[in-house]
Amino acid sequence: MQLEERAEIVDGRITIAPPRRAWQAQVAGEIMVSLHDFVRGRLAGHVVGGGAVFCVNLPHRATFTPDTGDYVGPVAGMEPFEGAPVFAVEIRSLSDYGPRAERLLAEKRADYFACGTQVVWDVKLCSNDVVKVYRASAPDQPVVYRPGDIADAEPAVPGWAVPVSSLLPEDWERPEAEAPPGELRHAE
View 1: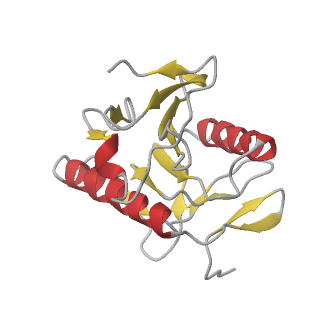
View 2: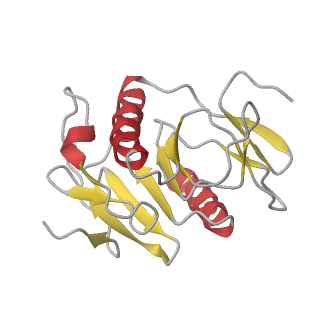
C-alpha cells in the first residue's frame, strides 16, 4: 500500500496525520539538522525526517511516522524502516491538546517503548513546557525543558544536546503556562 500523506496504521485503520503547519515544520527541521550534524560525525545511526515509515509488529499498531528521529537499524533502500527508531520526536498539531489527545499520545509513547524506542520527545509549541522528554526507563516521569534549558535524548543519542531556544521559530511567543504537578522540571 502506498500513501502520499503522513499516516500510521493503528487498530487496522489508516490514521492520516494532519498537515504540518509552519511552526511544526520549522521546529522539526531545526531538530533534524542539529541531530544530523551530531549523528553523522559519529556514525550513530540514521537521522530521519517526517514522513519516514517505521514498520513494527504490535497487535494493534503496524507503523510509526515520527516528525524526526534517529534509527540505528539497517537501511532498506526504498522500503520502510524495519522496527522503531531509538529516538522519536512527536511535534503536536493544534488538535493534539486536551484529555483525549493526552490519552492517545500516552498510548503512542507506550507503543514506541514496547518496540524498543529509548526516548520520545513530546514537543508542545502551544505550551511554555516546550519539550517533554519521556524515557523508556521512566515512561511516566517526563523531564520538562523550556526556553533557556538544554534538552537531550540520553540514552538514545549519547552526548547530543540542544538549546530549546534554538529550536523555536523567531515569532514564537512564550505562553502563560506552567508544568502540571507531578512532572519533573529540568534544573536550570
